Length: 281
Length: 314
Image (cartoon, rainbow over all chains, first blue to last red; front, side, top):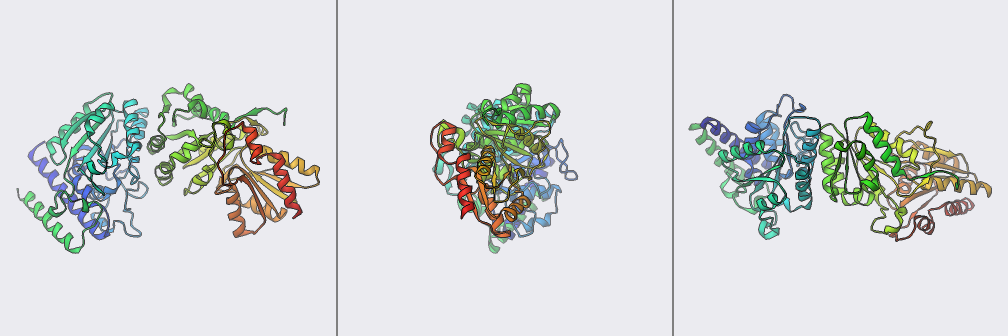
């Protein structure tokens, strides 16, 4: 990755974060914490990894992305808007009556959303079904799913992990956002999912364990994922919940709470300063 | 009907899948370690590369079927009714119902006639659960011929469908050559004017028998096969209510939330009419041979005739 490419991704991740704050603030509800922790990933997916076309959001051979941790819709929506799937201004209608930007992803109403999610654990299963169908159809597309580290407490997730290995879904890449926090507290205090990588490897998956805010690491992991044959691939990315907004970082309280006017202003000031610094380089 | 051929409706399901699979490349079938029982194994034998055993993992199966459907496949997903509608209810609701994807749920072993396995496997709540999901078509065929036709109609229908099939062999009274099935349309099996008996599943054959018993006692009963529970054939129900003045519903399901309540809901808003509901009266079943259980719980011609006859005298 060239320095310019990386800078562009950093700028986009920062804009995604701005979108997350603006949309959850306007909604007076939503989930900023886990959206912010995955901002680099959203930027990487929509500006580097995924074969998608905002002008033809349903093209048959597009790569599929399933936000299995559907509550992080603000992050996905910001990335989709930034990539041109719908107008950026619409982010401010998130969760409003009459808006197509539902609280959790809705494939029927939102351009670029491949699967309706929100009830945890179901998205990864849907992604498995997509990858299986793609193989039957000789569709060259790849299927990506993003899960939360709390989400993998759902038993269904492990049913899906078994399924993906059994059917050799090497066109499937799961990303687990290991930000360490869920609504009720640290994941290892609520119900420890650890060791995540060892468990996945025991389920027959190839894995990469990386820093989810590091673009070189993301690039390496996704290249590895594409190269693996005969097995599904999982990227377990260590992240900071609330990343990019100082007072939200590593604070469990920001899992599912929207910033008020004052907090939104503070957060946007921070993010705009970050953006100005990035763009000045 | 001692001399009538008996075939389980699940057998019709398996045969229909195999025939559909021959004609349509877009069909994929998922099962959860019950392919021999649900009969999807018949499809699997013919098309092994399009039959996917998910193991004993119904939650994943339902959402995976939704994922496959999102890619343009028509996905059939099967297990026992207890697990398809019960265990995986929320997956069906969110990944299949809410998305409106083209998933057809083929649930076998519905009702008390599962028999010896007992209450844990006798699903008496699936109509209620599936009816409550917006857009879900809910059906239960009366015989193997209807089952086959229903599966083909489900394939042609755009969107989610739930079909309940039975374990036990039941009399085949439809003619395979001439029978035509339409989703949402009931079928008058016998005309009558004193009382209308609306049944589905294996109780249609019992209701037809009850109609004969009633005729012998001077009661003219209209017998209706209501294979589609949702969307209900309201026109046919209202006509029966207006012309007969009394309705008896019969189903191998709890009296809560199934065909009986669907009929009552329609009637109380559009044409208040006295109704008697025959079904399982808010209790769990227990082990025993299917025929003995059906008789014990009053799901038989003799009891249907008794209830209907008493009703006409009130």
